[in-house]
Length: 214
Image (cartoon, rainbow, N blue to C red; front, side):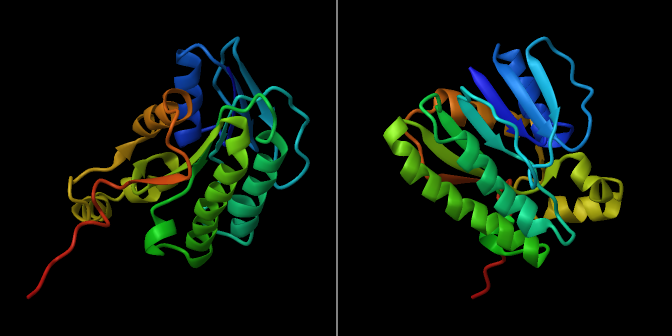
């Protein structure tokens, strides 16, 4: 199948690209940065998803992964551009599945206000996409990850005290790896046939953890 992934230069996007290549698929990656990933089945395109999007046909799986945490373009990048990418590439006869990388912030409202709002919008738009993709027999779902070991979180990972504080907030005392998210992405888009319109919270029990006081 032909897989389009946004934000493939590092982190979850890169892990997803490697996973789909490993499983024998053709992968096209969009990013504003260059990529060190090299494979006959991988095409890397320098694309700012907020601007002009190239014409591509025959996309089977779309993974909306590109996003930022802070800055004046958070809403435009995380939500508006994600909508634009989906509207351009998802609604065609070849489509099999669309996956959105949301965030646990979409449901708990934590972190930066614009970031949380943008990811909440992504989850709602994912459901809208599921409604409209049904006629193609295609699925639309999202992953709302909590802490993940990626370069985006290097400022936490490089601070042992802060890192431990974050781990202590989870039930399982751990964060997810980018490869773990990639494995789940593959299941949702290639194995799954019946789950659609759903947001999966992958946070090692962080939101469930609470101190109950009588």
